[in-house]
Image 1 (tube, rainbow, N blue to C red):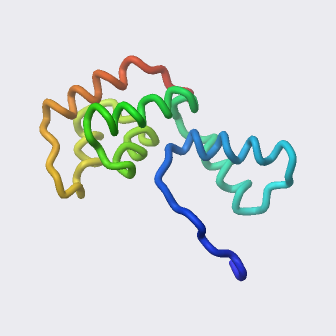
Image 2 (image 1 turned 90 degrees about the vertical axis):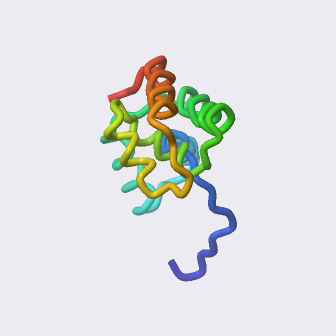
Length: 114
């Protein structure tokens, strides 16, 4: 990517990325990488953009999770403790089983799109 410079980088849920790219595509033509990204994001189950944003904020505010971890949880749509353990495996601060169960209970309140 000659001549391209990253101005800002921040973790965000994939449903938000998909929404941004779809809005951009309404007035502009997507390049190859952008098309690949939209096609890739369409293949996996996910929460709606509104639900994803709400879950993302709850994970940060109520559970004190870092942006990156909250985004992974929203993107991976964990359904059991094994999924949660994979997400938290490389986290320096250990999360208790009870907290993981609380997160799973909160996620059950939301429907995901397949």
